[in-house]
Amino acid sequence: MDNIIDKGYAQLAAPFSTPGWYVRHHGVYHPKKPGKIRVVFDCSSKYNGKSLNDQLLSGPDLTNSLVAVLTRFRQDRIAITADVE
Image (cartoon, rainbow, N blue to C red; front, side, top):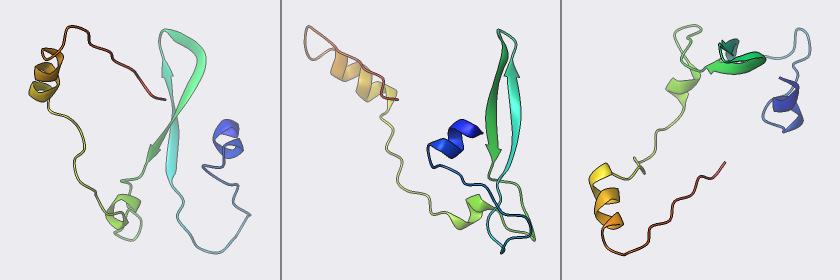
């Protein structure tokens, strides 16, 4: 959580502060990475019948279809891939 707060994605809430969105979260451990915890946020949890996911607008599906990706790989002799974090 310190990393998430340092990056500005979250902030500490003062005790008994004004109402706002509080996202539930829990830690998940990976069996091959002992001692390392991953924070998982549950934006679909409901409070008074509403969740954060209910309030957000969903945008268009921007993922490429697998057929289109495989077809483009056949266009040229060299293919390059990358992963952006």
